[in-house]
Structures are given as structure tokens and as C-alpha cells.
Amino acid sequence: MSESVYASAFRSGLRPDPSVTVDEWADRYRVLPSESSAEPGRYRTDRMPYLREIAVELSPQVPTQRVSVVKGTQLGFTELANNMIFSYADLYPCPMLMVLPTESLAMTHAKDKLWPSVEKTPRVAEKIYPRKKDGGSSVLDLRFPGGNLKIAYAFTTSTFASVSRRVVIKDDLDRWPDDVKGEGNPSVLADKRADAFRNKKIYANSSPTLKSSSKIWREWLDGSQALYEVPCPECGERFALERDRFVYEYDEEHYKLTSAVRCVCPHCRAEIDEGSKHGMLSGGVWVHAHPERKHRSYRLPSYYSPFLSWEEIFQEYLTALKNKEAGSVEDMIAWTNTRDASVWEEEIVATEESEILRLRVADPEGEVPERTVALTMAADVQKDHFWYEIRAHIEGAKARTVRYGRVEAWTDLEDLFRRDWDGADGRSYRVRLCLVDAGYRTDEVYEFCAMNSDVCLPVKGVDSAAMSSPWRVNNVVRKQGGRTRVTGLKLYGINVLYFKDMFDALIRRSLASAENGDLESSDGVLTLHRDADEELAAQWTSEYPAEEVVKKTGQIKRYWKKRSRTAANHLWDCGVYNTFAGEMIGVRFLRADTNSASRRPKRRVILSKGVR
Image (tube, one colour):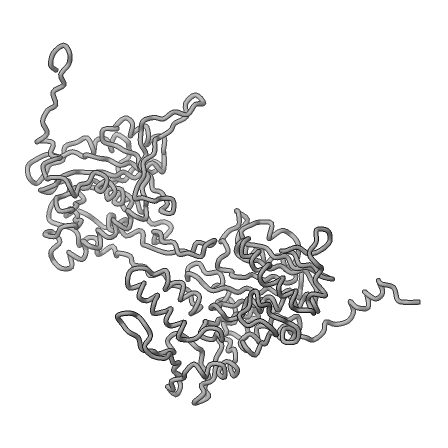
């Protein structure tokens, strides 16, 4: 009597897993398709020898559960993930999850890499169920006896549903969001899918991004921190390929290479040409800074790539350097992340508090300088008080902070912009325009501005990504009795990045003039009255320009960041709004006597029954 199907399956389950590692399986069976490979045909780990140790660590015979790779581009780590998938589907079937950043990337990977590889690799093709509606595989769900592979993306909560997975592959991790629809860090959620398996494997790879936010960099620091050291063909000593190991000559005017790129051995100082690269890679070894750590982490720049030349890499660097020196840093960030496999450290170009007070002049607080053409005021609204700054705009695109501080009530603000301010020239001045921040206590701000519409306007900062111009004007709409009505009041939305940059540039230009000793004689500068104190200095330096990565696009976004979570920035905001006020009323084009209250003629209103 033949053995039953159940008994056969039971006996099969008792047999130990075959002792074939991921790299061995790939070298025996994997075929690269022409649709997605620059070198289609039989896969050879020897072409990328640095992958062998990592492939072994990802194999079920090794107890390592976590492997993280900080990588450059064109190094073969995506195909390593595919090798892992196919070898497990063939010899160690189990539930697996592969997560990419977005839906389009998941579909592209499945259609252009995985399914063509299935069709080209007979060993895999006979295991994967064909695609069909009922009971078979689908584009994003490869099914095989004993398991399946779910291909998902990080921007949806369904990816991290409660199904357990023995193998979790986190691809291009730094392009994942920080939070997925309020449910937490998707990287952590993905890891939890493997909690039920004592023999789990979690593999993460990505080029890094910014030092302050890179997920893969944090995983690298948590792990063993391995670098691939190669032998010098001259002295035999090993060293890692890093940017400062390479030398070359270039045309400094056109930023073009004029010589071959060579690698310098740090031991014997021999200059090594690229023809020796393959031999060096074959003799390389991974050296772990923390071999005792169970979490294996690796870092590999693109200098090791068999598909990229050193000349290509460093010509890209020179182009990025040219653009950086012209004021555009995006290409240099991309090169650092994707070629050098290093995080980009934001350059904090922040003004120090002590510098701000160098802008003080001899004039007292509250006195309007000579040649002033307009006074503006900005108010920042808080829960139970207000911060304000009154600024004089002076001929020659100059400005002076006349008074700033904190008041407690709406009437206090009104007193400030309704009063006469004495000028150094013996004339009196009044605030021409007061901008009130409508981001908080909005209805109260609208009511106050409506009652003082001859002077006051509500303003609100708008994200620069939503702005195509420095500012925009919208009608204020209010609901009354279930109906929406236009009030006649205008809300000014300002591009906060644009005007913060402008205010910062004004401060820096003024500091440069102070350094040269010509602050008061220079045009285009900002000065402070003699009583300005550390409070103003602290708040004017409470923010600095920073950068972050937009997860869905990978692009770098500039923004202004607070020095600390608790740093007060109210007077900084007032300074930004007053900078906008100056642009709005065109103070650069006004004559000196256009805003003098004492020179204004009294208006006579002629009525039908006489003169009033």
C-alpha cells in the first residue's frame, strides 16, 4: 500500500532544511532577465564578491535575524533581496513580505524584476503558481507550495496588517514615511510582522538621506557597523574605499576631470588605478567594528561597484560641487547619499545671539529716525497676550526697530498704532500699516482688523510648497445663520520661506556692514535702537534654515527650524511680517515726506448743504 499524502508531507517536514546558502543557490540557479539587468544571464556572486557574506547572513542556516545595509547605487543589493526571495521559495518556503516606498515602485519591481526573473529561472518557474484570478499568484502576490511573497508599499496601513511573516524585506527604507496614517513608524510595524518566528529574517537596505532623519543610518549605528576592506596591490595591506582615498586633477573653471582617478593606499601611499579594482574586490573582507552585536549592519559606497567607474562617480561629484558653489546644494546631497553612501549633515548657518546686538545704534527706543518714509507694525497673537515690533522704513531701503515688546490686551495694540511717534527730525509719525497674525484666535483677529481696517490687516504664513508667488490675497468668509458670506475683509497669505529668507538676508547684510564699521552709513541694512536687549537677540536667532527629505519624491525641502522645541520665536515672526509689510507698501520707492503726520493736509469734505 502506497504511503498517504499526509504521511509523506509529515516525513518531508521532519527532514532538515538543505544546507544551501542564498549565494550558493543564486550561483546555481538564478538567471537575470534582460528586461531589468545590464548583464543578463547566469548570476555570478563573484562579480560582486562583497555580497557573499551578507547573502550568507540572510540564509536560514545562520542564526542572524537582522541585517541592515547602507548602500550606494549600482551595487546589486536589490538583486540580493530577489535571490533571498527565490531561494526561500524554492528550498525554505514560508510567508514573506517585501515592502517598497510607494505603490508605483512596488508594481515596477514586481513587473520588471521579479516576474521576468521567475520566467527566466526554471528552478523558480516550476515552484511559483501562475497568475490567475482564483487560487493562483497575482502581480503583487507570488504563491508557491508552503508559502507566499506579498509585495507591498509603506504608505498604506494594510501593508502592516496582522499576518505573520518569517521573512521581512524593507527596501529603500529612507524613502518610507515617518508615520503611516497615525499608526506609527512603518519600519517598526514591518518588523513586528516577524515576531511570531524564532527563525525570522529582517533585511533592510537603503541609500541614506539626512543625518537627522535617516532610518537606515540609525539601523547601521545599532548594528555591527561593517566596512569592506580591500587589499592594496602593492603592499597587501587592507583599507576601506572612502572619498578621501581618491585623487585626480580637474579644470577648476569648467569642473571637468583632466586626469584618471586613482585610489591612494593609506599604508604605502601607492596610487592605484581602476584596472586593479576587480582584483581588490575579490580579496576583500568585511571588518565589523562591533562583531559582538547580533544585528549585522554593513555600509558600502558606490566606489566598489563593478558597473560604475571611478571617473563617472567623481565627474558627478565635480558637477555637484559646481552647482553647490553656485548656490544649489541638491546635487551634492544626492551624490553624498547615493554614491558616497553617507548621510548629509545639515549645515546650521544660524546667527548667534551676541551678533544681533551689534546692530544697535545711539538713538533711543521709541524715536523715529530721520528720513523715515513709513512706520509699520506686526503683532503675533498668543493665548492671553501679544508680541509686537514697530519698524521704521527709511530712505535707501534701510530699516530701524523703533520699539518691540509684549502687551496684554487688544486695546494695548490699538494704543500703539494710534499714537503719534516723535521723530528725530522734530516731526511726528503714525503707523501706516499693522499686520496681525491670524493663525491663532482667528475670529478675534478678524473682528479686530475689521474694526481697525484703516490700519490693520490679518496675515497668515503659508507653506512655500503651496505658493507660486511671495504672497496671495483671499476674501475672509464667515458663516452666519447657516449661510456663508463674504465679509469684505482680506486675508494676506505669505510665503513664509520666502520672507524668512528675506529677513535673514537683511540681518546678515547688516551684520556684514557692522563688521566693516559702516552700519549707519550703508543702504539696505537694519538697525536697532540703543536699548535693544537679549530678549530680542534670542528670539531673532530662534530659527535656522534646515532641510528634510520629502519621502514620496526623495527631493530635498528647505524650511526654517526652531533651535529647540521651547524656543520663543514671536519677535522673529514679527520681524518676518514687518519685512513683508515693507515689500507690500513699496517703501523702497517712497519719498521721505510721504508719511509725515505733521505734513498731511486736512481733508475738506464738500456736502450738498455746505462745508464741514
